[in-house]
Image (cartoon, rainbow over all chains, first blue to last red; front, side):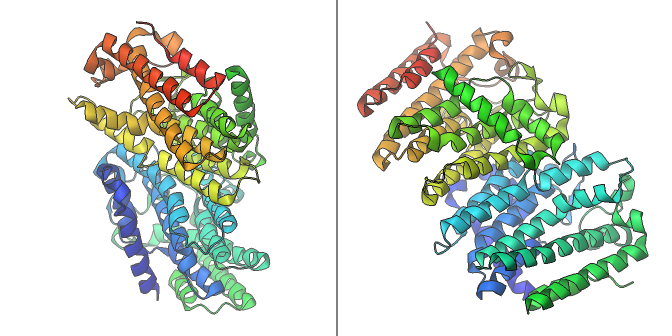
Length: 290
Length: 290
């Protein structure tokens, strides 16, 4: 089921870059498509589609959202990897965008992905979704994309380098840098599936717990994994002298907190009566044995 | 009348950056606001407001659009000035964004302005504008912001450096890099003013002629002006070995073509029965005597 979703998302993303408007803008298209189309878990897009399906029985209404979020996520990776930011040469197992296309084109490809992601939501959301809901979803995308979302998180992350920060500051970074896109995927997916405001507020708690779990797992993998498995530079948090959940709590406690958060996710599913094998199999894959 | 509009736009832009959502994101706000709030002619925003007024008697419906375009324009200036692009230290008479805030923050401020510009259109367009029209205007903004607009133009511009290009290639660069935002301001301003499709198509011709005139004038000023007047680095086209309309045609022919395009603008106004002192006074200021 995860594989089916990944197949749909990959095919639809490819379609987005075959849009005829790119015919006279090939070079920027290549750079935009390069990072976006590299194999990846597509977790955020899957959450958007599946959450819509949980509430409406079909993922169709969230297709534009899912594609838009993947573009936005790719944008954030491209800009985060730039020499003036994390200066990372490896992403999704390949050379990062600026290593292939140069710094100027990588910056511009990221810029163009921010707007093309929003445009994809506008253009690929089915006509049966009312424009009021569409505008709300767009506003959620724009909030997550900017100062009140991933940009706000990235600025805080940069400022935290080589500094001793508090756990509150670390939470702040990841709330905006990591959780924002999961919250966007899940709450907007619910909105497009016709969830009511109570359901959206409940599922938002799932998204927050999952987002934090995802970050803790990422911090653990940065210590225990190897580059080939992970497809990105490992051990870089330590090299950059960055505070992580592992440096705060140690490895064992981090693993325990991860499991607690995953349990919280299952509990919210139970409470809401969500029986989704897709949710379940994502949560299972998140586990790291103690 | 131009001054009144500038006053309105400056005040409303300041309001946008006093939004309470910025309270916990001060640093990125400072960088976003810095370039956006520097004194400038606000031509694109004025065109948005005045074109809406031409068709509806009031500029109110286009306020969000005008503010969004100013943010987008500032974004393009911030990213164009980056070391990996034009590497320019001076903008709007002051140190450019990355000279003040550093490269990483300047990139992120630009990113955040792309989404905040779109969000401002969503949030500051009055409720009486139907959501169908609002979505069309947003799509126009996103088109102008990305690969099919200013990003496409900037990529072509970078590729043209130190190369001999044809006039067609120069036209391509400026169609996307410069005209795109004037076309957005004027056609979307008309849309928000309730213009019909014939009127939108006619006023789009005005926008195209004006956009080209603006670029030719810019190329002329880069040769004959001084930095204090212009507020940005001058003579940089020649230094960068860039083809411009002046290198193509020489100064006299460029001035003549500028006057012809301005005449075309007046003719379109006459043909459409547009009696706007604001349009007229902008066109008058564009003149450069032979």
